[in-house]
Picture (cartoon, rainbow, N blue to C red):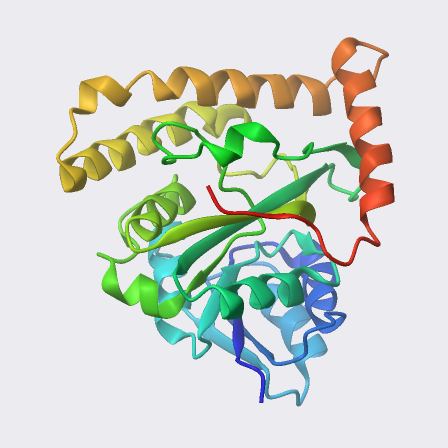
Length: 293
């Protein structure tokens, strides 16, 4: 029997998008999965939407926080409740491609030494209209050392072995932002990192994002806290890694300007068009390159 994969969904007030999110899991070519859905005291119809889709399917598992506890706490609870040997977070307003879990499980099973696998993502607006697609990883990833040196090489869709997570310090429940980065830093300390060089995740940008627009500077501040703790665990000088934020800030600003300004034929929009065309060719690729830095 195939190994169980746990789809981890931490939700707060994403009712309008949950149906598309859950349906993308239902359509997976890999069928031995469970959904761990933890609702952080939503005030909208999130739970009702979840229940209307889950119905009597035992693979859908709903949990509710007793009080609004934030992203770090809710994501940690998702992992703690998971039964799968491999886990992956899916934001409740995002979508994965139909082959995403199958491709991830193939690599995890074939490579027990790998603790964490990243891939590429597709950037969309609130209606899932594609604005840009991350280009192939290329040579840079082949020299990957750490997220500390190469920010955001580990991108959604990201999966990890639960056994590797259990050897780590675990997700910090007190973090409000930079929660994913905290997890990735800790997991790369427990095994090897791999990349599936194919876009597997539709990343929806919305005005409610916890890391864009007015929240951008807050996300950067929380990321600095995570970097500080990572340096402390690894015996590194924090001052040597503060410059990382310059890279992440410029990348985010570039993306925000591309997606949320009028779409004109600038260099960036032309590049985005090229990436979308490349993605259309890649969608049916059955065996994308797997990179082991």
